[in-house]
Image (cartoon, rainbow, N blue to C red; front, side):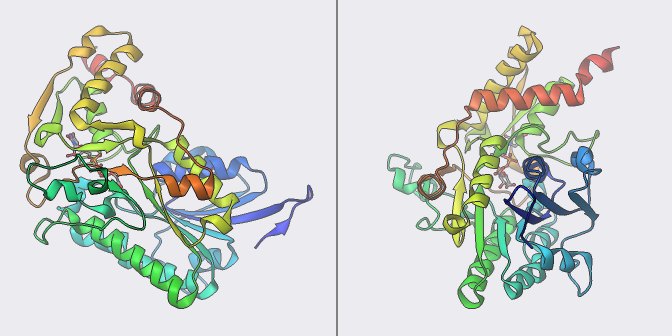
Length: 372
Ligand code: UGA
């Protein structure tokens, strides 16, 4: 619980569920840089947070978030906490249609006991949902895909309908599970006075995102790591279904700024859903591939990378049956701006550059090593 440190300002105790992931690792950097904070983190994988494991203001539990039982570490940690932040998730689209039961269990069902506990104890939960809860845009269902009216595709936290495809397209197992978790939290707020904040991230990019298959993970990661693997290995970048889907890319640093503002302004942040995204940084996936090639060429000082091969592949071949794509994600961020004073500052170019530099530094140029 809060108490006052010697310099007079309140120290806070955080529980971070999923502290070892991409977002969690950056949030941990930010929280621990404030000497008055104490963090209890839960994750199954500490590789991205090695530098913090010896910090006295951080306690790491190599444990899953559904292990809530009386006297257990998670229950004790939540009881002692001021703020519980939930980042635990299976959030990789290549899994949604391949193991939908795990996806629905981990993104919703296994979380219920921890959510219930927060409600019982009236602990503020900051829950990371996803921009994917919006599903597809209204525009995408109109003849020819009419994007002329922003009202038909721009995504507003409290107005836009959440539109998902048919059940046999199991891609939507993730968005449905995330949506149910949001509805559950909202109902716990209404009926049992749970203080909550729901965050909907719009494609956060930055160092430590995902993994390179065969090196520090398996399977198919998200698009950034897929394209980076292609650049590192000298294999073609692959555009799924023409690369026409559009995303708005958000710097992890802008995202963490938003989180810090929420933590500083509980009265404004509580009981709200926030889009956190950079509407200015919109690209189609084919534009992203070309831009990444160009920035990689500059980062490496190697003009030949500008001609790195780009191939087309169907979603059926790439993801298997049951895949369906979100056509476009453009957040309306006026709520975060008005209530938190937040606006994203990092451009698409600088966000990609920082991330690409990190990938080359961290994973090396395996193509060159292979040739040696
Ligand atoms: C993902 C996840 O659903 C969520 O984890 C998360 O909320 C969201 O990203 C996010 O980062 O905020 P999505 O953007 O569809 O959703 O994930 P990606 O795997 O990065 O795919 C983006 C687009 O690139 C899709 O159109 C996909 O088909 C395409 N893609 C992916 C390619 O064209 N080539 C590839 O090699 C990989």
